[in-house]
Image (cartoon, rainbow, N blue to C red; front, side, top):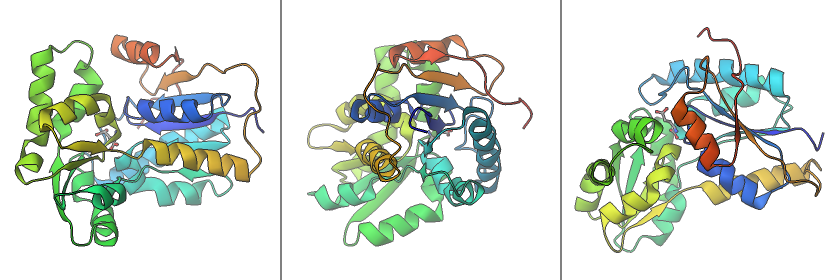
Length: 270
Ligand code: DGL
């Protein structure tokens, strides 16, 4: 059981910084990364559609890879499908990604925080609940930044510095104007441009994400089940996609994160 992989899942490349955080904490775990490139982006789909797709794709990945734990390293998928996934796989621990509203609300000095998410996640009732629970007395402004998701997924390596600056500036502008000094990166893709977002927001504004909490949760659940991989050779992870072939950009992401690339996972029908 200990040698079984941990599956890290996202619609695209957003979960990779989460995979890195897990690898830093648990270097001996075998990590399988799955980007659902066949259905990207999730942020422009309805909650029901995301739930259906995630159940289908994760169901196939679980059947094929037999992971000992699944990390849904995607806010949109977690908000839409976490409960259904846990019901589908009662024997399997499933860790979701929750927007880091709590640490942002606890640390803001201006008492204003900004939340950057996908078009779907930004209006999800789940976010309302988190805000009500953890951000009492704090003003919370939200921005759906789907164009930033597309930028990270498709253009991160080829864009000019000016383009990167412009897309980051556009995403943060309304939140900074509202007085936010904490930006919650509530879409995993945005972690790839965290430095650019902080720079665009200016001094005194910090980005907040849930990477470390997710990695610690993975460790806790594996330890509790006595399923941690023992010390040994450092396992090289693998990045797979659900499209027929990983494209050149995907291959570059795999290389950047020290992962092998391919083969494709699961059937191609929707
Ligand atoms: N990375 C995803 C998230 O955290 C979704 C991006 C998308 O597919 O729109 O919400």
